[in-house]
Length: 255
Picture (spheres, rainbow, N blue to C red):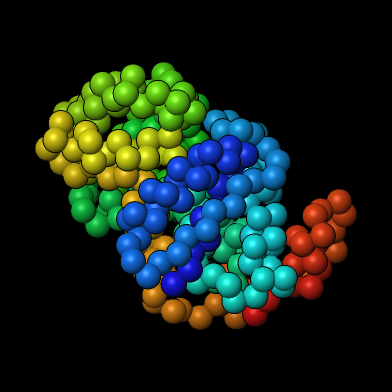
């Protein structure tokens, strides 16, 4: 099995770190390749950066899964916790696409009734609330709490952020009644396992959830929708896009 991990920001070191961690989680028999955004923010932390990242993710999809590389991957893991461009990727892609927040919230909902989310960067709180509503899980998310540090700052010095992250997770449980807590974002990869002993409810790593859900989608082998809103779009003339994305849109997504 072969998965494509899309990092829609432009930090290649973060892509490499996530691929290494995801490969350990996936286990034997699964190959994971990483692809990093060619343009946009180094680390997504605003609505504007997320909108640009959606374009960057579509561009990567066309580059890696488009007509030039048919059949190379079994599924795509969108490794950005805000899931930029997720629904457009699902529409255009001939193979399953799973978002990091989508996977995390869905798996958390299987483990408890009320979900708490802890992430880096305070501007993410309203953005993730909006995303939870889009995903149909808004009523299940009891708490969204963020560190004063951005996700990039957490990734640069994880040890310095651990005490605050653990405190926020405990607050989600004690004050917000969370039955399960998600550590969301690439900057927090690997921290949930270390901090689980400090919490008496399940503490999930968003990357672990993403890998598990993407593997499940790939193994399910469900057919690409041929009708409805996620069917391949009709040919769409465009201007100024990369050759791969222009071709994928101009020809319609492969069926």
